[in-house]
Length: 159
Image (tube, rainbow, N blue to C red):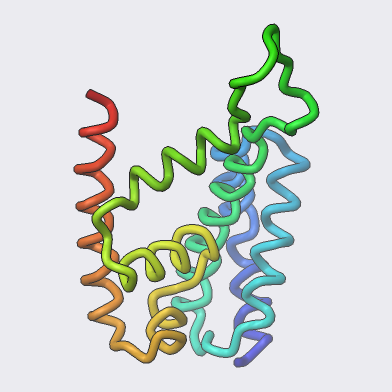
């Protein structure tokens, strides 16, 4: 990878990236941290060859980083959960695990793995394709089918 391409692209659109992060996180400190995390994630990669690719990757990884930060900021520590009764209380994490199990119900093992790698691990389609020894098109198709099934499952759960 040409580190200079990433660095110059980052410096060129840094203010735009900061605005995107501020819009999502609504906190200047968190936005700056997200920018730094984004740059570090891309710095360790080997596939950026042009300014256009670098800019697209910066925006995409920043968005995923911000979403990940929002997910972790809304979690409730187990020690802070107060109960007014004894026994039978489920922690929010247990509820979330059960909800996620219902959401991914009906997905094939390949679709579950692709969904987790892209959604939770913030990997790109190309990285997942290499990791699973699949074509990029096959990864996109499986992810599309997984999203469709998840939307259907959420509709059923919300009824």
